[in-house]
Image (cartoon, rainbow, N blue to C red; front, top):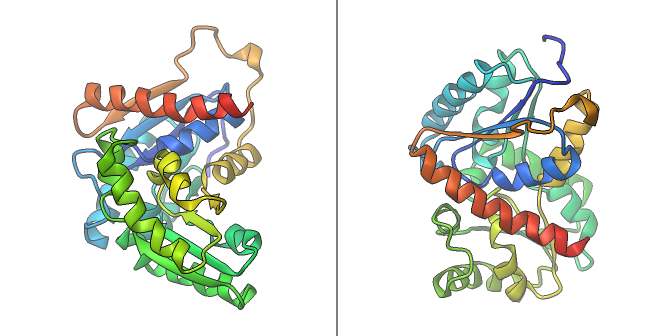
Length: 269
């Protein structure tokens, strides 16, 4: 594996816009880090696709990021991580950070032992997720995990429809049964889902919500040499977007979604 250049960008990949929730967390933790984001919007969503299709598309898109001399790759898609990260790590010459549903922190956070897991059907049926669930259950045998494939949520985010009546209806249909079963902690097992957090909170009430962006940012902080602020030009373009689909359309959606996420963060600070 080649040495990591502190001034090289990192590549962040997702099937669509969901990985921008990871980008927001990285930017909060590493504000001077350059990022190239690639969205495979021409083939999104990945949830209904076969394992082989997901593997082939992930490898192709990550190869394009590697051609741009990125220092590390972040697979900011739970479905792509579950289906492709082991293969990527076997040949990619840079560190690779993936995402997985936060079952372990959820098991530690729950007060009553019931955790709801919201993810795509592809993630929930993947070998990697089942192995993760097995390990966490072995460590926390008293915790019950209630799973649900959240229908239509990815499409809501991809269309920028975060707070419509339709969006709130789809969120309630998925979250309310988990709350009714006693879940006091919810795992957002898809990087798209944090963009629906406001609608989720309305239904979830006091339930804790676990997402993966901060954990990914911490892992990058641990693995990447950090450039000094003075080494970054004042006019540096620290965030670039690319897409297998309409680039301009995606850049507009990305700006909207990042404004939502980073606006929430500024309100909390």
